Length: 390
Image (cartoon, rainbow, N blue to C red; front, side, top):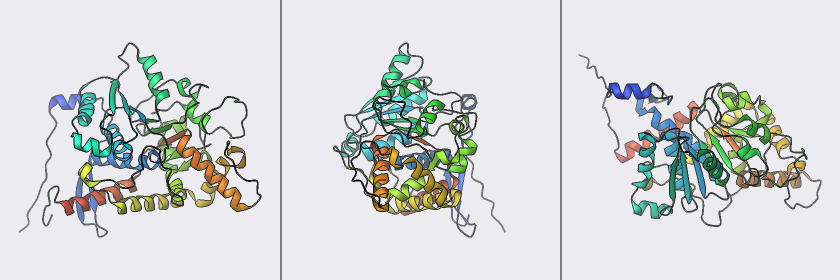
C-alpha cells in the first residue's frame, strides 16, 4: 500500500492576484536534492533569492572604506535584505538609509516598519540605533532636487527595480561635481535585455580607457571595468551591459576579485571593524564562517570555468596598468613584484574608495550553495517542518 502526500500552499485572494499583475518579482519554490537525487529541502525561492543576491553584494560592500549613507531604489525583499545585511555588517558606520520607490504604497511602509520594529537591543548590538530612515517617491513635488541630493550624498546606491528605463539622470553622477566622490553602485533589479537601472553613460564612463586625460578635474578613481556576478549571464541578460555595448574584456567577475582579495586583509574603517561572518542570533539564520568559505570557493570555480583565467587576468591587468595607478606613491622599479604590488594597491584603492559598478543577474549555483546551507542550519536549529519518508 502506498501513501500519497500532497503539500498545498495558500492560494492568493482575488485582491492579491490583481496586485500581482504588474509585479515582476520572480516567485516560486526551490527544491534541494542530495547527490543521489533525494529531495532534502523545499524553500521559498523569492526569499532565498533575495537573501543570496544580497549576500553576494556584501562581497563588495564590505570593501568600502566609508559607508555612512545608503540610497536604495525599491521596497521589496531584495531591498530589505540588502539593507539588512548592510546594517548587520556595517551598522556602526551607517547613519542614513534613503529608500526611493515609485509609489508610497503598503510595500514601502512594510519595509520601513520592518526596521523600525527591530528591538533596541539588536540595534544597539549592531551599532545602528541612531540610523535615520527616509522614504521618497517621484510623487514628491521636490523629487528631482531631493534625488539629486541623495544620490550625490550616497556612499552606496542599491537598485532593486525591474525598470525598463534608467532610474535617474546620468548627469547627477557623471558630471564634474558628481564624480568628486567615489560610490559603490549595486544593480540587481534588471535581469532581462530590455530592462535597465543604471544609465548606460555611467557604464561607458567607468570603462573609458584609463589613459584618457581629457578630464582635468579631480575625481574618484575608475577601475576601467564593470564588476559582474557572471560574465556569460550578464552578456546575455543584463540590459545595462547589452545596451552600453560592452565587451567581455570590459567586465570582471566578482569571483576573480574574491580570489585576489583573499590574498590580503580587508581595509579597516576608522569608525568600525568589518564583520566577516553573519551572526545567527541577529538574523534567526546562521551563516557561519564555513558558508563564507564555500561561497568564495563556488565563485572561484565559476570564475575559472566560465571565462578562463588567462583572459580575465588580462582584463584586470589592463584596467590596473601603470597608467591607472592614480596618485599613490610607489618606488620606481622594473621588477615584476613591484609592478604587481602597484597594481594590487591600485585595485584595492578602487574597490575601497573609487567608483565601482556591480551588475548581478543571478547564478543558479548560488541558489544551490546557499539553499543547501540554509536547509542544514534549519535542521540543526529545529526550524521548519520535517516530513519523514517523503
